[in-house]
Image 1 (cartoon, helix red, strand yellow):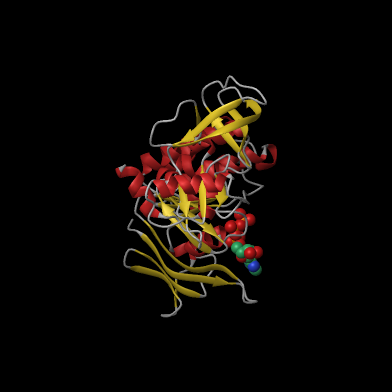
Image 2 (spheres, rainbow, N blue to C red):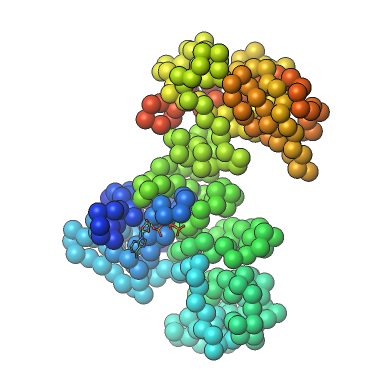
Length: 365
Ligand SMILES: Nc1ncnc2c1ncn2[C@@H]1O[C@H](COP(=O)(O)OP(=O)(O)OP(=O)(O)O)[C@@H](O)[C@H]1O
């Protein structure tokens, strides 16, 4: 299956508001792409347009050379002719069919012969761990089990493109973790192209090969997960990806404050442009003697919150409260003064975009 290309796609439901604005996006063949963003940012609308369930109001969608939508050329290919598998958050299982029959249904429509149909349905149900309940009816299952059956129903037809809209939202934490690993394995084994909608940044970071972050209908950044985490393209992505979120300190506050300290540091390191804001990830803050090339300040410990494998520390650094996350035990208590330092600062310009010249300077330093 070739790449899926969205060119200048917009969607308005009327009233002048755009659910999706001028979106250019290529989903490479075999990718596991997550569309990530807060509620209402246009992820579902984008997925539904790829599926053919919504028509764009401008732009075009193509798979390889085959145009599926083109507003300009008046082309629209209906969902059933797109050969894509779909699972939505609000999956609909047939209530009068057993789980096995539900999964076999799609295969029956595709005229797959009986024995093969049965084997493929069983294998798919096994994959999502509901094979023990194969002869039950949907009403006898929990929401999470039903969601897994919906996933199995789609997997059974071996689609080359899977479109998934929050398919793990009804699962408890343990099953979610298990299904993330399963989906990743299914992706690797099947070679299918997956487009996955989620508002959960951890889900995107753990599963995707490519993450497209959206906000208010617009693409904010398209990158591999670790690249996005290490170098968020703007303030929105910086605050959305990562937990706890990156602290972003605006320049121009009091001269004796944290912002001034950070600005003095970046100036002393020859930053080519003055940032409007500086970001620090909580897990990039360290304690103890700083390396010569790192920014550091004295910090007053306000609280230490142990969480088993990590320690979250609330600090006051000059005029600002910061959080640090340490994966080593923190031997300190309220009122103690520690030296905190970091080797990675994220610089943002007045328009909120990342100052990339600083990253290059940091790398070459
Ligand atoms: N059928 C519709 N009619 C009118 N407005 C709609 C319709 N569907 C979506 N919208 C609007 O379009 C915008 C984007 O919605 P969309 O469902 O794509 O966002 P989302 O990022 O998937 O959000 P969520 O995670 O909450 O599902 C929202 O402002 C929403 O209210």
